[in-house]
Image (cartoon, rainbow, N blue to C red):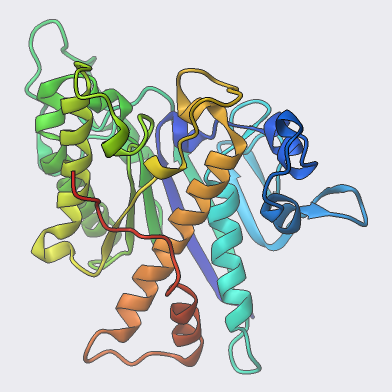
Amino acid sequence: MAPIKIYILAGQSNMVGMGSVKHLHQLIDNKEHGTTTPNEYRTNLWNENTNSFWVRDNVYIKNEETVGKLTVAPGYAAKNCFGPELMFGWTIADAFDDADNDDHESPIILLIKTAWGGKSLSVDFRPPSSGMPPLDKHQQPEEGQVGLFYRKMIQELDGFVWFQGWNDMLTWPTVNEYETNLANLVRDVRHDLHVPSLPFVIGELGQHGPSELMDPSKRWTPRVLAFRKHQYDVTQQKEFRGNTIFVKTAEYMVFGEETFNQPFHYNGRADTFFHIGQALGRGMLKLIQDSVSSPGQCAKPDQLEIAALADDAAQLSLASE
């Protein structure tokens, strides 16, 4: 019987999925603005025989009440959209398939999306170890709201992908406590699941584009840069080195081209969400590589082959700002 690997994909609206399917069709057909675009979208996702999207037979996804095999289809993301789950699942499945041999059967992969728009880590996803939020009288949450979505997302799993942050980036108080809350989130999820070294991928809040291209005169620039540093710094804490990873997404932001959800959600562009999902998947593979190559651990042959596939993953370290 094939083993089962379970991954949680958690966050707010960008993890819900805002990549335009309309734009994805444009990319597949090479018709965006009449120019030729990279064919990775067509070669990865399009079945020429059926003239439709491929369906992954060994990757299943659950998003609220929708359950099925991974493909581009309604119910897995926002209406007429797809999210990071698409290429995350594709990337993970390809790695396991390429590492398959007679002794190690490719696993069944289950993706569980626990993402809701407009939710903050300071209140909605607040981990138990963070206690009650230090909010003023105008920001007091309703009874039971604190940590409600943290409790909703807990499952038994093999990896965790966190792609969230917009609501926390909006004010300095929530920016300043984000590193503490995110570190507590990692600890509490691992504690509650009894998985002390659960692989944890943290996706950068990259909506504003690369740091070096941001306008320093904008009032939100210092908050965005500080927020990204807090995200990265969590992965550099001693207890989290080698078992968490920060994945940059700002480099996939596209400016000056057609938008499908302006000015939010990476402009709703399919190429952006395609590459974000791919990068998150590569980040998870990098954690697999680190875990199987650590001293004192016995690596299985298929794990070593999977780890090798992560060597040319996108640069995942924080660029100097």
